[in-house]
Amino acid sequence: MSSVRDEEHTTASDGLPRPTPTRFSAERSTLRLGGMSAMVGGALLLVGNIAHPRESGQLADAESLLEVAAGSRLWVIDHFVLLLAVSLLLTGLYGLSRSFTSAAARSWAQLAWSFSIVGVVFAAALMVTEATALAKVADEWTTATGTARDVALAAGGALFELSLVFGAGGMLFLFGATPLLFGLAILADEDHPRWTGWSGIAFAAIALLAFTVQVVAGETTLALFTLFPVAAIGVTLWIIYLGARLLKRSAVQGEVRG
Image 1: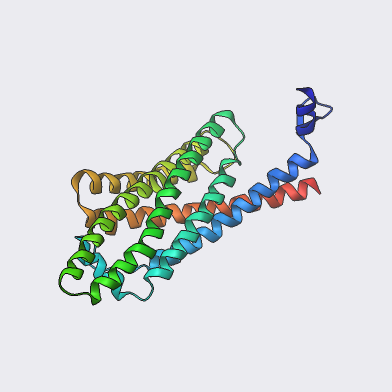
Image 2: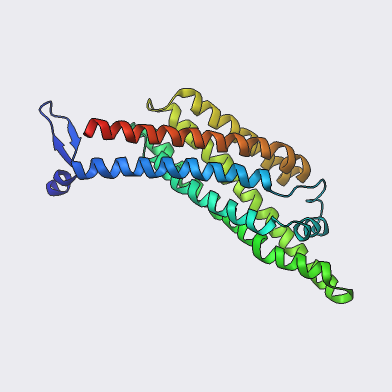
């Protein structure tokens, strides 16, 4: 047991544990990679959301969504950009979860990290489904006639419902629970400005309201075209800012180490 502790820490003259060079370097690398991933992933998420095809009523039914998917040249590539973005965000959020020092903050951050994994799984499933299966069915539906067109529309209906489920899951876990819990972690710690904690909680509340409006009230237009975009943009900018702080902190640690 003592050999494990010796590998992780050395003891200074004041009796307090200090990270060994290996542990110090690993922590710094985690913060640097997390910061870069959060900033790049956040930027790609903003670009992907801005470029995402949107038309009034496209989520009213399967036929409306198929029309938008079939008529957009950016549909497939935009969804793969968003897939890359949320994947990078996961790495960024891991770096953020490792940036806290107090026990209470680390507990909140670990819970937030767990929820972020679930959220990214939902978001990734949505992007892959809409970039592949839905895009293929949309193309077949536009060119088919008679029974084949009806079959394609039925398949599109199933994918439409699946997309709503995946979207709601991403809304709840990635844009709702994750920033909420990270916000609580920030408020329980002293390494980040408190306003960033309250900001995360505020944006999370909007995302959770959007989720409630969609799932409980069944109002997809208000939830996905008004409330959720505000929450998504807010959370994305919040993550980019925290990523910049992680990069700065890793640089400061490098200077101290040097």
